[in-house]
Image (cartoon, rainbow over all chains, first blue to last red; front, side, top):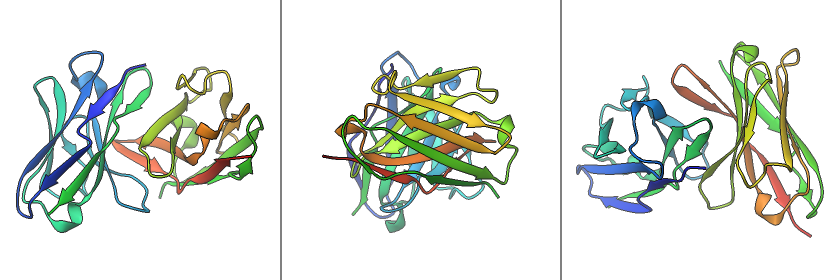
Amino acid sequence: QAVVTQEPSLTVSPGGTVTLTCGSSTGAVTGGHYPYWLQQKPGQVPRTLIYDINKRHSSTPARFSGSLLGGKAALTLSAAQPEDEADYYCLLSYSVWVFGGGTKLTVL
Amino acid sequence: EVHLVESGGVVAQPGGSLRLSCAASGFNFEDYPMHWVRQAPGKGLEWVALITRDSVHTNYVDSVRGRFTISRDNSQNSLYLQMNSLKTDDSALYYCVTQIGGWVFWGQGTLVTVSS
């Protein structure tokens, strides 16, 4: 089964911009993988931020955006806030679901 | 409102069996594929199993194939995971999950601990 890779950890300054990426062992990530980005804070259930590459859920702050970048799915956070500190997971669909290992984002 | 409630998680011995259940409400259960996803303490999310709307197709992560069986009862709006030949690596919070209109819905999870 495919392996989905993410940066293990990233740090961003408050107000800064950071991009998280999501790669696939099978090749380029495309729209056919219906990339999702999920946010999980300690003790909470994961929450959908982005689906189908770049569609933002109604409750997702506009500072989060999704894209395809260099053969990977990407999540860009602009104007980072302290409450954005969390674990972020990429989810790709093949014939099954595969989650990335997650990126621990620190806002510091 | 979509509501998923898992149950059945307990402490089990290696080699033992468990059956997890998930009660679904707030949506047309029979119209959607369902998944089990697990998360070991302090670790990431791992997709475990999938069942299609009509139960015709199922699929599993390699590490559980042949040991776990996913099933559903559309008349009862319920999803199940039969877990056999349990290993310590199966210890995790197990979530019942579905995807509707771009949103991934999660239950609160049920904790499975495999320990002697």
